[in-house]
Length: 482
Ligand code: FRU
Image (cartoon, rainbow, N blue to C red; front, side):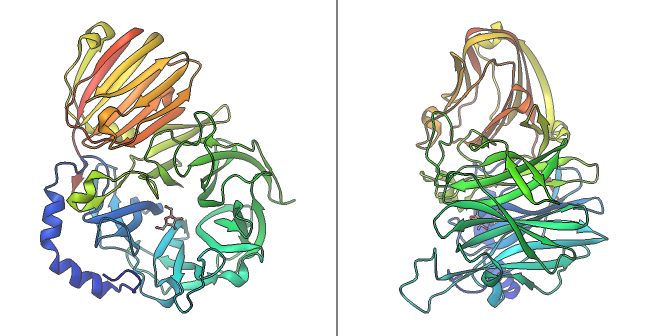
C-alpha cells in the first residue's frame, strides 16, 4: 500500500488474498506472543473503541497490516467473551474517505440504548504546498462519529468537529476523542497541543452526541510536555481520573524516563460550575517499564473499570527484533483498575487465572538455588521481609531492591534498553507475567507496574539477598483463537 493513499475494504481484501505467505511467516515466528494480542501481520498500536456490547467484548486497535513499521492506520478488531478465547475479526474501519484519508486514528466507544457510538480522529495530511510545518499547518484532524448496532456494521462516517470548532489558539494536533456522561451532558476529551506547544486536554460538551460545544481545557500551570495524546477521563472508586500521554517531558529522577509518558492525574471537576483543580502539577506514572503507552479504559457489564494498553511506544529509541519477522507490538493484558489512597491500582483481570497450569511452590531458600521455568509463566512472590534482593527473572534480566529503590535491569535482553526504577517504602509482593517476548511485573498489589518487551530465550529464576518469603510459579497456556 502507498503511504498516503486511501485504503478501501476491497483494497485490503485483495492485498489479504495475495499475502498468505506473509501471514504464514508471522504465524511461524518463535517470538510471537502466547497470551497477548498482536497483529496478524504488520504493526499494531493503541487499543481503540474498547467496550462490552451484549456480552461480547470488542477490542479494536490501530493497525497497519501491510508492513511492520506502522504507516497508514486502520482499525483492527478482536472479540472475546472471556479474555481467553478470541476471534480475529475483519478490520472494522478503513481510511477510505476524504475525512480520514491518511489514517483512521485513535478513538473510543460509548454504549447507550443498544447502540455503540464510536468517536475517532480522521487524520488528513496536506501536500498541496511545500512550506507546511505539520504542526501549525498542513494537517487536518477531523472528529468523526460512527454508530453500530452490533460492533461489525457501521453507519456512514459523520464529521462532528474540525478546526473551525477547536479553540483559535491550538496547533493542528488535536486527536483521540473519548466520551463520558455526567448528569444530562456528554463530555468529550481530546488530546491537544496549543500554538505555544503546551500539551493539554480539550473538553467539549453535548446533549445529543452530535452537536458539541467547547467547554474547557485541562492542563498544568507550567507546561508539562508539548502534546497530550490519548486522554481518558473516568470515575473510579469515587474519584475522577485523567489518564493521558504527554510528549516532550524531561526526566525527573526516576520519573518520566521514556521518550513519551503515560501519566495519571486525579482532579476535582465541578461540571456545573466548570471549575477544574488538578491534585498535582506532576502526574503519577501509570507504568514504569519501557513499553507502555496509549491505554484506554472502559466499564464492562459487571461494572469493572478495565484498562488495556499498547505494549509499545511511539518513537522508541531501539529497533524491535520482531520487525525482521514482519510484525511489531502487542496489547497488554487487560487490567482491573481501582484507586487506593489516591493512587491507581492495576491488577490482571481475574480471568487471566484460567491460563494457569502446573503450580509449583518454593520458599526463598529454594529460589536461592534457582528454579526452572519456561518462558511463558506467572510467578507470585510474597515477601515476609525484604531489605535487599536481586531476583533474576529470565536470562540476565534482574529486578533488584536496594535502599528503597526497585530496579528492573534488562541485561542483554533489552535490545539496547537498560534500566528503569521506582522508589518504594517497602516491597511486599510481586506478580510477574512472562510471555515469550514480554514482561508485566505488578508490584505491591499493582501500585506500580513495569511493562516491557524482552528478547532473550534462557529461562530460569533465582534470588539473592536479605529477603524471605514464598513463591508460586505457574506455567501458563496461551490464548485460544477461534
Ligand atoms: C498514540 C497515537 C495517537 C494517534 C494514533 C495514530 O500512539 O499517536 O495520538 O491517534 O497513535 O496511530
